[in-house]
Image (cartoon, rainbow, N blue to C red; front, side, top):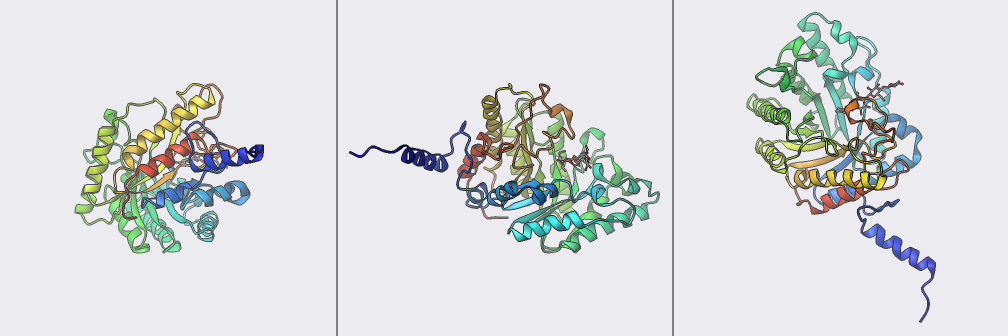
Amino acid sequence: MRAISRREVLAGTLALALATPARGDVEPSPAPALKTLAAQRGILYGSCAAYTQIAAEDDFTVLLARECGLIVPENEMKWAEMSPGAGLEDFRRPDQMVDFADAHGLHFRGHNMLWYWRTPSWFFELHDRKSSEQAILKRVDEMGRRYRGRIHSWDVVNEPLNPQDGRPDGLRKAVFLDAIGPDYLALAHHAARAADPAARLVVNEYDVEYDTPEQDDKRLASLHLIEAMKKAGTPVDAFGVQAHLSVDRLPFSARKLRRFLSEMADLEVAIQITELDVTDENAPAATSERDRLVADQYARFLEVALDEKAVKLLTCWGLSDRHSWIVRHETNDQKWRRDGLASRPLPFDDALMAKPAWAAIAEALKAAPPRDPG
Ligand code: G3I
């Protein structure tokens, strides 16, 4: 009998690894890609990306196009990033990102038209309601019309809710509410629909994933908001669950999450998982253990979320640990590791090798029931 050569053994091992990615293994190029596994279930898979990444990192760009069917700009479309002064808008970076998506056959999520936290400073100096309304309408109309027909979905108003502010409707007491009153949401959504009738209009929220009293309140307020928008004839097509998760930071109830998603689906909107990542600030230092715990969180959340057939889209807030906002220590210091080690929140590591988180997402997609694409 002929001895099997070392090369053949390696080739066989590699083929097996590519076919069945096992949790705990690190592998350079798993197959099939997440976008393919997702599409087989009627789900669109994607990631956020930044202009600097697609402009300068060829290895990352190849991976992005391979794994994703959609991209969303991490920061480039935010109003404060685009507008240095009243009436001034710099469309160059958003244009380049939408062009990149088109060139690579990727869908595009618009993030976002309005967000209280990234509103340009000049807006706060407008002192009458009419000027504020005009500025909002101009912003929404310009963004909608400029990219008309090229945007899969728009986060029209990002994070409009904050029940802790004490309003019965749960709306966040912030800049747009102060300037216009609660009607600002309807104003923006009608303008967005008129500007790009084909784009899905999304209300995008965080803190609706865990089992805490605050998140109970946010879930309830989210359901009430979507119900009220529907009743009033305000165009809204989807609810976005950001899903910034952490290892062992907050209690999780599969039952509550499942019920929330199902009640949201009953309101006849699609659901999008829009910014999924898992931070590891509470996990031990050993990389393999951390990666396992992060993967477990992905698995636990996605097992419930993808079981709901109204979930039509799954976007991670980054593809590789090379680029995460948490690794860059930009905001939310509760989620930073204190031991100086870089966090590992995303499906690929900083060398673009697939992690156990990748396998957890892949397995969850494979187990998800098929659905009509949204
Ligand atoms: O662009 C400047 C750069 O010139 C400067 O050198 C650098 C120094 O800190 O700051 C850069 O700006 C940072 C920007 O990201 C781009 O890297 C801001 O300080 C930083 O605050 C900003 O953080 C972003 C944050 O939103 C606020 O816009 C994160 O990258 C981004 O991941 C995060 O994303 C949000 C979603 O939009 C909404 N949901 C929550 C999610 C996480 O907070």
